[in-house]
Structures are given as structure tokens and as C-alpha cells.
Amino acid sequence: MKIAILGAGSIGMIHGALITKAGYDCTLIDVNREHVDALNKNGAKIVGFYNEAIPVKATTADKLSGIFDVILLHTKQMHMTDALKSIEPYMNNDTMVVTLQNGIPEDKVAHLIGRSRVIGGTVFHGARYIEPGVSELTTEFHCMHTYIGELDGKITPRIKELEKIILATGDVCVTDDILSVKWTKLVMNAALSGMSAALGCTFGEAADNYDSMRCMAYICLEGARIMESKGLKPFEMEGFLPTVENFSFTNREEFAPIDANLKKLIAISYDEIASMLQDIRAGRSSCEIDDINGKVVFEGKEMDIPTPFNEKVVEIVTKIMNKELIPEFENIKYFEMPELH
Image 1: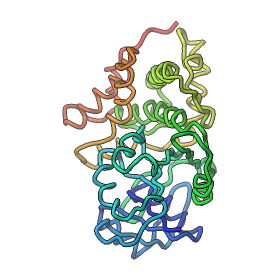
Image 2: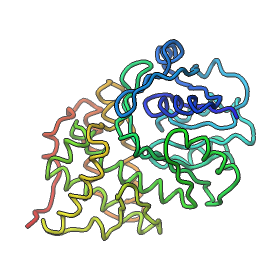
Image 3: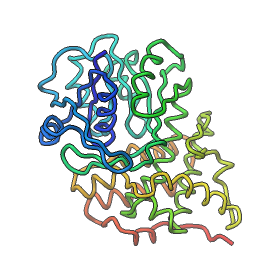
């Protein structure tokens, strides 16, 4: 079984290292040559909630050879097309490509490489790229969890084989409704990562502020309404369940249990920052805002469901990327919130 990690950044590097440690033939692929060189020289060094340097093999796509049986796709969506084109010569008809990015990229991936190769997936843990060869696990190790599923919902022999491989990275759930799981994670990302990027803060810092917590709740409510209209069934992730009922509130008393539940979720990754904020701080020219909060906004417009809080996050982060704003907590003033009594 020959496995590739396509996009060996923060989470990709950690997954590749743990799969390698479990004894699998795993290659970490990345465009950053300095990162690749460090991985080959010093191993994949994981810090934070897991501490170990694990010997791995890494390369850039131009030096690949052979056919991969499994490709775990960890590239951000804005780099996805180029990455898939670079590795397609090393696939055959049976190659499994597992979409582990943020957002809902499955249709795009299927269009590029064929639907039969695609397996949907999502991860419930976060990481931060520190320097070449080093990533920080920012979610408690015992909470690491990956969800995978066939796009048609069938429980196939290949999905069970894939489950065994990904078990090396933590708990795994094989689901017959991967789209609902992906949407659940999207709503979570829109709230936590969206506010982290817009306010330039950790998840925990956002959780410690009453106004930003209300914004997160409204973001979740907008996503829940879209999920309900699409007929998707929210999937509980560490107590997070984005239903309209769970995120509807009109006063402080009704908001209190929502606030407490979100705080409990955020405690698992208190010091984590959004990958979008990592891109901003690194001075990169783009981030995944259009694929996270922007996806909620797009679907809301398609279904005539208002999404003012997600729209505001997109507006703020876009202005930050355009150097019209800076990522700071003062940006909370741009959100218009109803008064609670």
C-alpha cells in the first residue's frame, strides 16, 4: 500500500508522520523545498499536544515515481487544482483521493480526477506550521478524529481499508453521510476560524469575549438554517451540533447554554488560530475565506437565506488581505448585533 500526503503543511505533516510511524509506505509531498529538505534531514518534528520527531520521506511533486494507492489531500483549496494536476500521473483507476481540506471541495475534486476516485473526509483537530520540518498540534491529542465516507454513502471494502490506515492518526469514523459531516465541520470552521481570522486572535481569546461569542453563535445559526433547508442532518462533533434549535436565541438567558457549549468545544483547542490567520500573518496573498465563510454566504444566496454575520466575516478578512484593515480585536465593532435583554 503506497500512500501520499499531498500538502505536508501543518496537519498534513502530522498525519504523514503518524502514518509512517505505524509502518506504512508514506511519502510527504510539498511545494516548499526548504520544508521538504528539513523533513528528510531531521524528520517530522511534532510539538504542542504531541512531542516527537519521526523520520519520514518527503519530496516535491517533480521528483515522484510509481503509482499511489491512497492520496490524502491536505492542500488548501486555492492550491488544490495545481496540486492534483501534479500528482495525477501517479494515480491509476483504483487510487483513492481523500479530501481532508476545509470547506466542501468534493465536487471540484471529482471534476478534476473523476468521481470514482474521490472519498470525502474531514478532520476534527488543528495544527500550526512553526518552521520547516516542525508543526504544532493545537488540539488535545485524545480528541484527534477523522471522518471519512464514500460520496454515495456506501460502506465499501476500500473505505474499511482506508479506515485502518487513518487509525494511525487518531480515532476514525466511517460515515454513510459524509456531506452532512462536512457541512457540520464547515459551520464550525466558519464560526471559530472566521472570527479568529477577522479578529486576529486565538479561538480561546474569541471565547473570552461576550460579543465575539454572540457572533459565533449567529454564524452557526446561519449555517444551521442552510443545512436544514438542504435536508442535511448535523453530525455531533465533541458536543457541537449545528441545528436551528440549538443556536436560536433572543435574550441572555437563552444564549447562556449556547455560550457554555461553544466554550466547552473551544477549550479543546483554546490556543489554536485559524489557518486563514496563519496565512495572513505569513504575508500570503490569499486564504480560504471564500471556501469557508464565503461558501456559507454563497449557499445562503442560492437558497434565499440571509447570512449577514458570515458576510461580515468575509468582508473583514478580505479587507485584511487587501491591507485595508489589520487583524485585531477592534474589528468586532463592525458586527451589528441585536440587543439582548
